[in-house]
Amino acid sequence: MENIKKAYIAGGCFWGMEDLFRNRKGILDTEVGYQGGENESPSYRNHPGHAEGIELTYNADETSFREILDFFFRIHNPTTVDQQGNDRGSSYRSTIFIQNNEEQKTAEEVIEIVNKSNRWKAPVVSTLEPYSTFWAAEPDHQDYLVKHPNGYTCHSERFGTFL
Image (cartoon, helix red, strand yellow):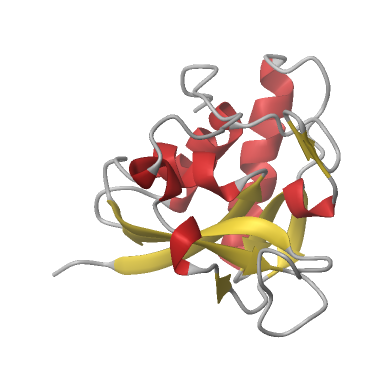
């Protein structure tokens, strides 16, 4: 029997993150959307305070929240405030949306490991925010880089595992 869980993260433009996570072992589904902002039913044109995030549905028997965070910190720059690549603003912040005490502890531990590795030239500034409603983005933003393989992304795997 599968042990199905969800994780919520944001690390800049949601298209690139989704594209890199979609084929990871244990990831069953990805959905891009908006989280942590001020309005209900946000859209691409109106999402004040929301981060462009991703909902990951995963089989915890095949991957762990810790492994998800390890990959998260390898595919975006967690040392820049409200910026990834050319994208700037709070929509592009690096955030882990925490659902429980176990996730909080795991996130803090992984951030400490990443900082001690000195692979990034500055410390991690990713925020740990309490889980809030995840609003799915419009259909044309789902699987965007599958539909537009030459579309913009600032995400890539920069390092091997931190763990």
